[in-house]
Length: 215
Image 1: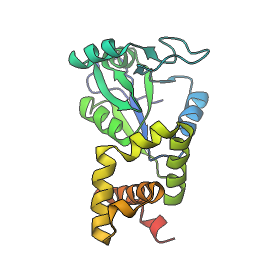
Image 2: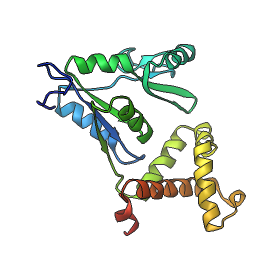
Image 3: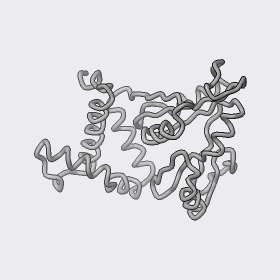
Image 4: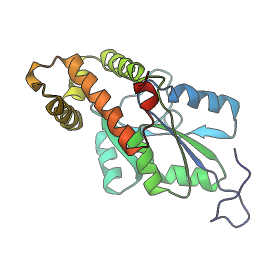
C-alpha cells in the first residue's frame, strides 16, 4: 500500500501492519473486506484458533486450527503477538507468520478489538499503523453487541455478563448512579456496561464519543 521503506530495511521495502479496531457495530469487518478487495497487495492476517473448522474452511488459509494443548504450548513459548480467550475458544496472532510476511514486503491487515490492537502495537511498534473506527452511534454499538450475544446463544450472553471486566465496570457505574445491582435486568446490565465503557473511552481517548452524546 505504501512506497516508503521501513527504517530497518537495507534497500528493500518492509510490509506494514494495518490494524483496524472498533467497538461492536462500527463496521470494521466490512471495511477490512473492502480493503482486501480493492488492494490486492494487502492480505488478512491468519489467526490461530482452537475452535473447530467450519465447512469449506482451510487450515493455514482461513485459520491455523490448533488443539487447546497446542495453543497453550504456543502461549508458553511466547509465539503470539496477541491472544484472547473468547466464548470458551482461544484466538491468537502467530508472531513468526506475521514477521515472515512483513519481511517479504507484504502488507498485513488485522481485524481485532482494541485490546488486540494495543497488544500488537506494544509488540511491533515500528510496524503498526493503527486505525480506530467509531460506531455511528452508541445505540448502534449496544444493538450490535446484544445481537452478537443473542446469535451465539445463552452461554455466550452469560459469559459476557459474568465476565470480571463487565462486572467491574457495571458495578462501578451503578454505584455512581445509586442503583442496586441485583435489581438490574440483564439488558440494563449490558447497556450500562457498554455506555460506561464508551464514556471511559471518551475520557482516555480524547472524547471521541462526545458527538454522539450531544445528539
